[in-house]
Image 1 (cartoon, rainbow, N blue to C red):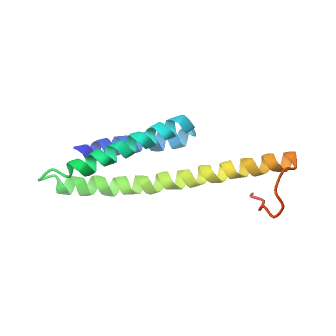
Image 2 (cartoon, rainbow, N blue to C red):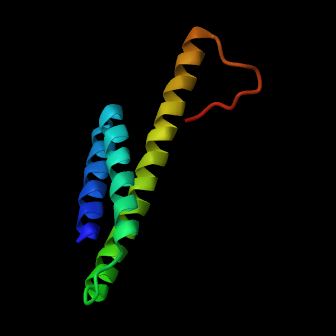
Length: 99
């Protein structure tokens, strides 16, 4: 089923996010997008609706977890940039300090 492919690609994205590997994150995101497009085009085969509902529920939970990881990585990156500006003395006036 195409949803299995979406799940597999989502697992790869979560692994890339956990590994903090920008190249792997980009590749996994593109592969997930392709799998979602193919799934949307194929639809759910007759007789597989219940299984599809279970997989979709699991997938939605993982998507939420991936979004949280992205936000954490974004915050960490912003904090690093802010610290670098502080060290160099190049922070713009009025910019917030992140901790």
